[in-house]
Length: 360
Image (cartoon, rainbow, N blue to C red; front, side):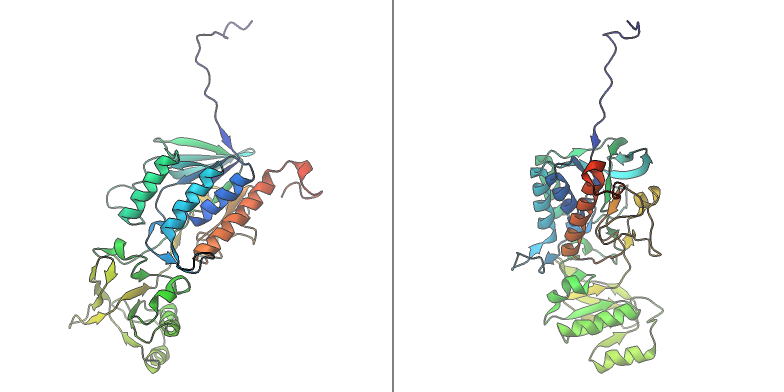
């Protein structure tokens, strides 16, 4: 008998290994969670409650909801659905990740506030509803530094949007302040719309909005004015779109509704509008992808195949952080499903795979 084997010694704490850790709890991550859990895999969704699905936009092209459904409601229903199939939830932010043999180790920090002055996504009301649901679903908040071990990882980390800063902005995002014409151009029907941007993309968005309304103005949004050839400004004018070569000094708003663009010209020109499209480049949240050695494109987006594979075996990605970067909730849900199918296949034993596909 080993003399060190004494009954008064504390037992070692068993470390749970999840079949799949999903980083991000928006539509892509929740779709992946639902589908992985349905395939009888143990799933942990790690989310920092800081994503686009906590804004106020209403999705009107999501199949099965003829009157539209708020993105925040899709998130709530998705969390309920994933939990029903057995997924677990951890509130926290992944700060480090690496591979250890056949497993992945993720370090999760429970403080998701980001510190004083840090801008976070979402309205106060939507965040509060999400917090309350999380408690009812058994969501656990990570400690100061908690390790998660998983056999596979799905990155659904989303993006950060550099929206203009102004009082009341958070209530406006998704209600009168938008960023994607494919998602929200429909909301512009017969309304007065302002476009803020200086480049070709801004010009194209202004012209594309003519399919919805003929009341459009565009402001460069910066002191240097527009960066497009004069011929493109002529195109705008020929289509009834007035272009202003000034930055925007303020966005007067009330109850989430932007009422005007006040320009930074000497006259402080006021342009009455009902909604605004800002042209900006979202930043993919790719920190964990970088640590895992996942390939990124020149814009920093995660490179994936049509089945959501990354270049790292066992790591998959879905949603706005990936190279397709479609922005739409319906696309994110599809990509999350694809990522789950790919991760599930990766977890099969060799005998369950077609000959020659054992490493897929």
